[in-house]
Length: 399
Image 1 (cartoon, rainbow, N blue to C red):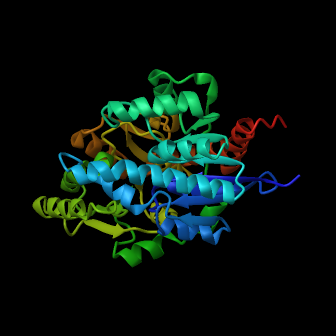
Image 2 (tube, helix red, strand yellow):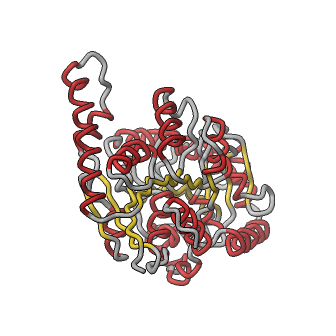
């Protein structure tokens, strides 16, 4: 029997934690069961990495025009109000044609926006649709209209929903979607990737950091809800008691929001931290950079659906400091693999970071505990096998 043809649909081409998860899950799918392809609006770091692992990529789904309209405020602009439904319907029809002409057997929507247009396209093409949700669907992150659409589509037109955490699943159930069609499958990481990382001393030298300097870092796209400004404010407090400490911000601003990065650099100057905070920009060698840190910080001010960065830090044997909310507590054991603090509290964040940087023995113990938990509970094979089971259910395959 030939493998099922799987089309994964997303509205992003940049790389963040969720997108690194896409690369890992598609790279480790059983190709005797599923032959994966990927559809997104345009080329980017994600599409290039997927192509490197043999995943066929289709760009132009949905159209850039539709995404640009969605970024705009429609307001009283009648032209945009007329163009939006036309662009929306056109994108759905084009994607449905791709599904049918490509001979795809099942569609997997892999981002919040894709949940909407990929589901409608799959319905039009008469193919089963599954969701892999990486968001917590509730107000105020999503509007009431979006939540109504998501609930309706999830309840009426999706065959299966895979959530990255129990927190994400509970939000869907609270929205009114039956829990019977939702299964939590935790993201995983391939521990063999760590065997190919560079020595921390080499990475530090590249960044101009002294070999023995305490280093705290934050990894992820530079967007406001991830809390990079709180990390910088916390770093300024840590520097008061540990002046030799250095701080890394690994990641780039989201497309079209480069001014936010300028604001963060301005904040560093205001706090006198421009010589202590290093902005690396987008990096493919995230695990290398994590191993060069003494503690990895997660500073989100909104509930995090999962926290792929935390998983990677634990796999690298590094302790974590993370804000509570969402699926974070499903990953971090407070006081064992890391420390949990309230969101939007730079003082608490600074205290936790400093306590780890000042206690090397504590840092090593937490790092080892985190690595053990990843090996036991968050493997990439476990993630892929779980996803395969749910896709087979969507197809009505009872094997």
